[in-house]
Amino acid sequence: MAELNTPEHLRALEAEKATLGTVLLDPNSFDLISALLEPDDFHDPRHQLIFSAMRSMSANGIGINTVSVIYALQQESALESVGGDAYILELGTEVGTSLYA
Image (tube, rainbow, N blue to C red; front, side, top):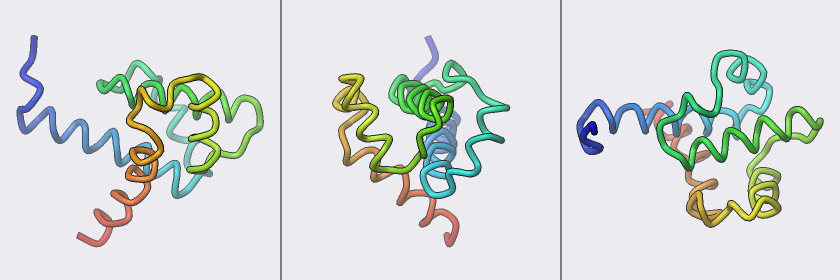
């Protein structure tokens, strides 16, 4: 099994977080991103759950934003599995800070 704390792995996790955060900050980006990625493309199981929720929301015409993703994950009893609402909120803030780094 691959080491989970390698620089490559940490960069991949940061890329996953940035991808999800981008969707939270710019929901219009989901169509393009979802055309390129599937939930299984995410290494972190939390990110798989979040992306799956976003995909389901989009398919059902539900707008994707921080509040709606938190609500969708609550309805699926998956919010705590992904780290709670604090983790979802963190995803959106990390993208903004990395843009200006």
